Length: 264
Ligand code: SAM
Image (cartoon, rainbow, N blue to C red):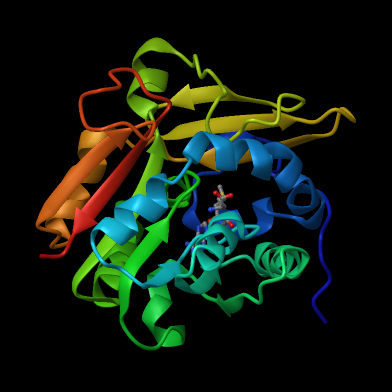
C-alpha cells in the first residue's frame, strides 16, 4: 500500500544527495501542501501576464503537454485560455494536488503519472507544444538523464512543435551569489526561498514558511549556455532565451531564463 510521507529525509549529509530520482521523495505531502503558499497563484499570474499564452498563440499552438505540472498552475491557466492541455508529473503527490486545484478552478485536468526519462511509454500522441516550467529541469542531476528527457520531449512533439523550458539564472548564483528579487515564481512574500549551499554540482535551496516549517530542494545548477547547447544537441533548430519574460537582451540580469526551442 502507498503510504505518503510527510517529512523529507536527506540522510546525514544532505549536500551529498545529487541524484535524479531524489525528486520523488522531495515532494512529500507536507511540502506539496505548502507549495501553493510558496508560489502564490495570484501573484504569479500577475508576474507572468500573458507571456506563455502569447508565445503559444503567436505560433498557432493548441495542444500542450505540461510535463512538470506540479500543483497545476500552468495547466489550469492554459486550459482556461482555451488550450487542449495534458498534465504530466513524476510525483503522484503533485499530480493529485494538481487535479484538486483544477476542480477548485472548475476545470478537469487530464493527468498522466510519468517520469520524463520514459515519457513516451505513458504518453500517447504528438503535441504542438511541451512546457517544462518552474525551474523543473534542474531536478536532473545526470547529463545522460537530461539528454534522455530532452529526447523524449522532442519525440512527443509534432514536426513543428516547440518546447518551452525555464530555469533559474544559475550563472549569477554560481558567479556572484544569490540575489533574487523574489518577484518571479516564488513570490509569496511570507516565504523565504534561498540557497543554503552552492557548488558546480549542487544548489540546495531552503524554503521557510510562516509557521517556521522548513523544506529543501536539491537542484543541479544549469548554466544558461549549457542548457542551450543541450537543446541544440537534442535536435531543436531555433532557441530563443528570454530573461524574466522580456525579449532577448532586454533584461540583462534576470532571475529566470525561459528557453523557447523550436523543432523546425
Ligand atoms: N511546474 C510547477 C510549478 O512551476 O509550480 C512545478 C515545479 S516543481 C519545482 C518541479 C516539478 O517537476 C515537480 O512537480 C516534480 O515532481 C517534477 N519532476 C521533477 N523531475 C521529474 C522527472 N524526472 N519526471 C517527471 N517529473 C519530474
